[in-house]
Image (tube, rainbow, N blue to C red):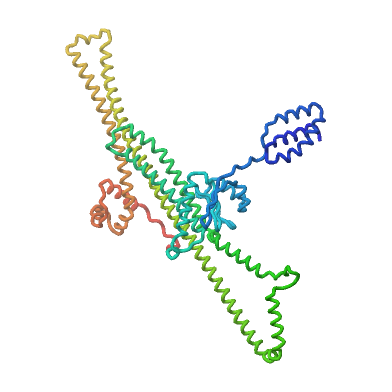
Length: 534
């Protein structure tokens, strides 16, 4: 190895000091240090740089332990601190599941032997006899874990005759969904109260304080942001439940307790089917078994003749007994299989009903959120219309002032002409001042009247176009019914025909527009018949 390569390698090894693998690095770095000491001064310079290198690990930083809490089916609570890497080895989590627990993605996914869930504040792993909640140091998780524990204890202490027994995992999922839904509903109630009061301040006609209206308008934006965030959380959780409902295999995998019992039963049957092993006492059997063997030998010796006489009858009886026992065993196996299938179907229906109920409740909550957001948007649109109306009033006032200024400017122009210090001969004209003043005022008022009349004409044309649009909407909504009434009838008196048919009344503008549409449609040539129609 060259001196420079050894120097680089030792520099990398020195940076591992303080890491979890520093002992291995020390064993590897000692020979390199001895090798560098035998190198020329250039290598010694690299050695000095390596000794001054910061003690920073080049590998992945160790994960900080996360507080966790375990709630068992028997009511026991276990609190400890662990890492997601340790959980991955304990529950055999996949890398994707570990990333899901580390992220904020909502998930409810059954796996082999456990259920992975993340409802926001509540997330962790659910097994057939325990539930592990991640992040128990957060106040929300602590409060929700206490409520889940209390609900589980209440379910366990309830009268068995008054409640229907459900598996542990189903009760835990119900408790967590109920707590998550209650948390979302409480947030919506708080936001609803704040939004209602804010919108009331903005739309109250008796509210004269502009400062309070501006303050309410400033509160509206953060309230809308919080409401949108709540709606997004609700939609994500509802989409997770819908994915579970759409997948029948996932619904079957929620039966952790039944699957655990099946594994125990299979293991028990496997142990029963194993051949008996030799006794550890040198080949001697049990005393009871030896006694039975001796007693059987004596009875066989004494009753050999009687057994030979009744051998045929005993063989037939044994065959009949074996057949009956086989039939009974087959019937019992079929009954057990049917009962197990029925139990599995009932448990699957229970899980599906539970998830469907909370999915419907989340959809209803989301509808309430959208309704509240619609109220905010409607109020904002009303405020914008009010502001537009105010701007239009100000614009009309400015236009009137501009026209008045123009007219006054014309009068000022006349006075400017006569105010020049030049001799024009008009100074000596009798009543010249009165005539000039009267003409200036008449010119100003005439210009103002002409401008105002032009403005009124333009406004009237704009209102007429708006009325035409409204009339066209009304006519298009009723034109099909009117066409059916006028089929094979002359459209001579359209108003009398509509009044006699009970149709909604129409204005003169609407009747004129409808008459024009019907006449244009009657003048169009009929399309030629195709061979298919013939």
